[in-house]
Image 1: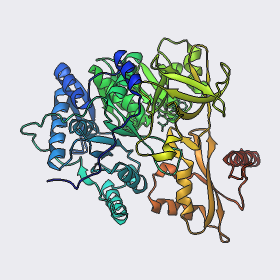
Image 2 (image 1 turned 45 degrees about the vertical axis):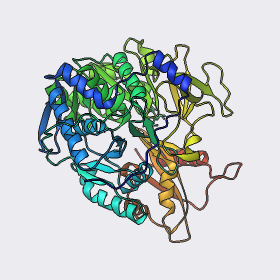
Image 3 (image 1 turned 30 degrees about the vertical axis):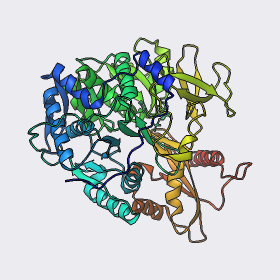
Image 4 (image 1 turned 135 degrees about the vertical axis):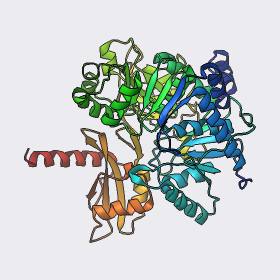
Length: 555
Ligand code: AMP
Ligand code: DBH
């Protein structure tokens, strides 16, 4: 069987040849590929437990040794090959946290195809965009989606949308189905170590999502160093309760860092204290990675639980700004060491080190992995600010991309002409090199670690026939850090209600976490000096509104 011909991918990565040669000479970039990664670990750690988690095939908990994981990945490769998936094809990988996440991840790698790391919460709006941009050949799905959604029905709607736009929909591969006996195992169909091997997702800032091309050479450098910095080894038992696709639990050091060293990955279906605490006790979990709101739910629950959390040694927190006061509670309330992680799927990852003094661990978001991570803190005109002052963070280095995948001029705007990635984050740099994240200058909302591009939600709102304009901004929130607020201007009375607008967005098929938590109906927007809608003024108006609401409402 063969799939329809796909466009050739663009394996360009943009590192200048002399820079690449230097990263190679320094030993950062090596020859290891993802197709071969698991085979060497399986040979070394055959009988050790690699993965524990639910199976979407059997519906029960499963434990796989390294040897069993390798066999399952070979079977997935055989299945994909029989279905016509070829090296460099793009394959959407969309699964809940389950053992099949890992078997399919390595099966896709082994086939030489590029996984595209979609989140379980992505719906037809996002998936259609990913399929279109990546020209995806296959879509691996399984299990129930969030809030009981059926991923097969979603895939059906994706297919309809793609066909209507003249595209060929991807082949649907159900990870819940039984795997074939591999028979004669096809050899790994590897692509080169410095070629693109997968597409990670960016939180984005524009109307269309951005895909991040990563290579084995650059990514595995960050994984190896992350494992070393975080003290990960064969005795590490890592609880993964954030979506496995997210760059943080995937690579900082995450699933790949643990498998790199022969440790055990435990996949939790959700991060709630009852689920996570039971697994920490039963699997003797030593380490986990959390976003701040999950940590805030764990802190009070730890004092009440009957589960033994004593095995827990390191709790990593990242994805969104952790308040210093909450950071200080980790040791006393959870009896574990805190590690702050400030990273991005585009590359740069910062860690507080396990031997950093307490004030650095609670008060900073860490320092870069590599001595060759170049950091610039600049003002609005691109000039370096004085040491210690707040500014925009620019970065370049051995595992930070030089461009997005097929993103055109809108994508190029995220990079300086000399190749620095414009993170859009506001930071201060301490003399020790540690960074403090002080704010953000990009039109993105960080809802407890879930990133939402304002422009994307605005685009969907503007498709409503009775709206003239829409502007989406962050709204401060005690628990999630930020929530989403949409200001809308109706096209005359009667204005659509919030419920109608939510229904409209639901019909558009966008992920639930992007649907605004609050709608404000207004008659006009404040404008900047250039006549553009001023999101800054809207945030200020919202802050005034929220303040007067709290003052008025009785306690
Ligand atoms: P993405 O580009 O979608 O991978 O998201 C990365 C962004 O998440 C960063 O540029 C920051 O805005 C945000 N982020 C990640 N970790 C932290 C952290 N520890 N503190 C503050 N913001 C963070
Ligand atoms: O938020 C992120 O994207 C992130 C956070 C921590 C990340 O990509 C990472 C570590 O690698």
